[in-house]
Length: 222
Image (tube, one colour):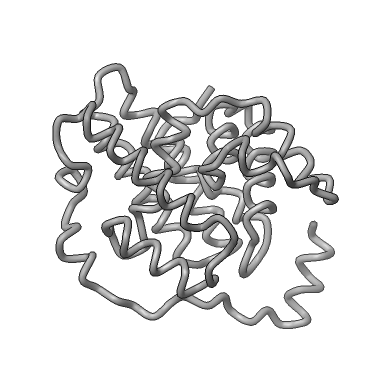
């Protein structure tokens, strides 16, 4: 099951009030990118692609400020499952793990939520919607759309080079090439103003400093 697009946008509006940041516009642009690409691929549902793209990062609603990858992945999954949106919940789990099973073969997590993520990924075969959002997550920023190389540099500026980053980039390029064969054109042809936004270089976003009072209030509310 899925919410309507209007419901998904409303969820983002509520989430932005809880945790404002560029992730909300990034989510909207991920949805747009997914919809536009899916429209060109026979057999894909562009409305579903749009909705799961909108909600892929909804787990960032969980608290104010920066939310790490395993936390927002798992919290998004839980939230969508509670709503009965199992198709969106799946994407919340898979979108950050381009390596899928290979990501966890030699990794034994200790935290319970990371154990749950590993179990889910190890029992899931990526389909076109998983792969589409993994790709669009790398194409969409809060200020528009950019070529993959630009996005990879942007993420590296914010977080540094992590283990297996380069292999993940290769997977993303492979997904791009596969979809382009199905589309009969470049993915960049369907992303509005990408030539303009790719040339923009805004400073990397930094999460706001959370005051002690706000942190205590959030802890009580959770």
